[in-house]
Length: 248
Length: 347
Image 1 (cartoon, rainbow over the protein chains, first blue to last red):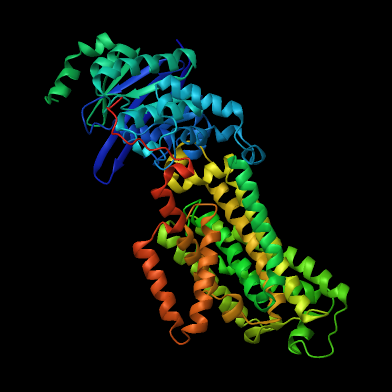
Image 2 (image 1 turned 135 degrees about the horizontal axis):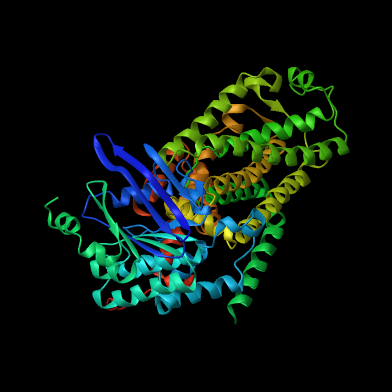
């Protein structure tokens, strides 16, 4: 059994009377790619938000690298090396791509004295390198707010990589991206996983994408864990098929 | 001519003009000193307001507090403060040159440090507020401080404090204060120019543009906000301290914690010149000061109406200020690249 990096144990979260997550448990294996699927409103993003500390959970426990993080603030968790991207992209629109990248340097590895230094040549090279990695090198000096939605998603992904995370939570990385470029993105995500050694935990609606990448997939429905297993197991699971077709 | 050369010449010209100005226009010595004060408070206001997205209406608190702290330190170094304030600076209190300048030096420095520390405390309490709530919260702090000091008899109460007069020729005194403000102003400009080029500068810009995203990227947002405000407060406190000695006599509500005057002027300067730019606050301060002096001289009686009109026009029609307008009009000059043709969706 490989090492577990994120251990979600019987987590429940409700907003008023709405039970967004009920007794959800799942493990993300270190160095791997784990998928999270489920119909709209099944509680996937809520679970992500719980993991990265956007809201306190009602019960259960969330451990990252063996440390209980369910009471930590967003910043503190991010500084542990657990990062997330947003479903609606969040980039700094009034700055160009390179500036966006430079801002994303990992502040957890920076003392105030380091912060008072100017950006180094290495910082710029890393930014350029990663922008090239996601295919935005040509656009690096444009204001990021002028980029298309898909390009902004790529930029946000590059920014996350710039931050040198241990584990990256991606909320629908391929949504809004031109279908012909999805293959390129899948390949880049895989490379981020293998070359940079970043553990990926991905919410995805595009079944082709997730079945191609993930080693383990969890499926949520109505806030509860419906099924888990390898892509093949999930694809042939009648409960999953029913959930997506609305029978659940 | 290269860009660097042109810049160097521009800076040299401005510097030279700053040195010559008080001698070339001796009648305007105090006016020019006030102009530098405006530049200082505008540049420091922009550190939080323009660069970090926190519009404080309470920066005047540091001006007033700096004035008081500097004065009390300077007096306290030589006399008992209670005795001094009761006598309202009456005849028996002589200051030697050393006591005057020594007290001023330590007082102004102490004012900066004290304001810096109080910014951390006030910031810790108010940085949870966003947008207009932060503005009103900080304004409340400044107003409350003015009222509190008014009732603090040991520190002069509502009458304020009368400081010793500049020892020596008063015309030279004017030039002396001009150079204190000019020196501080140039210092602030160099400081912010450097700061905005660092990783720290980028981080506070990130807080302005999307604080939640900055949080999610692990930026120490609260810490950086406190540092920034604390740096701004350091300079404003020093400027306040110098102002106290320049004014000689000051009182709490009208001259120290003057929320409706300088407290608002600094914001208008920045808006006029362009928020979040290096030169905006400087240009805004110059334009505003000119406007103010002209209307106060030639439109007396209507000067506040004219000022109000200026604020309304700026806020409604000219939100990005001079620099913002230029940036939109000529983005290339600012190193911003715009794709002219709408490109094909690349991703």
